[in-house]
Image 1 (tube, rainbow, N blue to C red):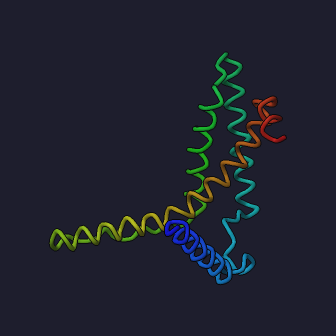
Image 2: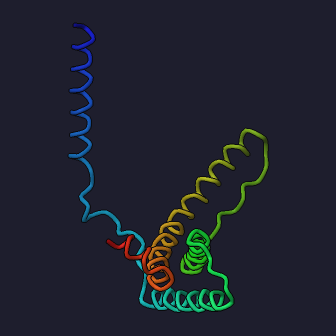
Image 3: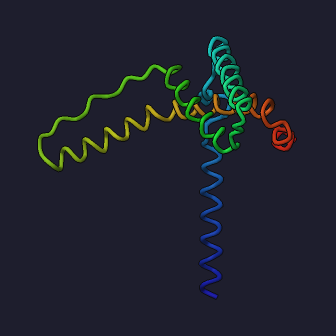
Length: 150
């Protein structure tokens, strides 16, 4: 009986906490938008996709048909490079060494700031990857693209 009563109390507390979080969550319209690409960046992505398709067709004319995993990895590497070129990156200065405990805390703060810088780059890289993947899949692997799209 005690276990059942404590479980009910726990369930009520968790439910109230969840409802409170939902009530004080920011409105979706007020949140910052995700990564947005400009028209010039979309043109560059289209040119890179066309060049990549040309390279894949040249390789196919020589008898080499890359697997879809190899194409996916190459596309993500290319999209990450494009994302780095689209983003203005300023790396924070590396912390100086004074003593070991202070240096460890400073290095952890440095890694945290690097992760803050890397998160928009990864978001833009994912966006570029999806655009490139759609274009390349439709051209090189039409049956796979039909399965992915619907």
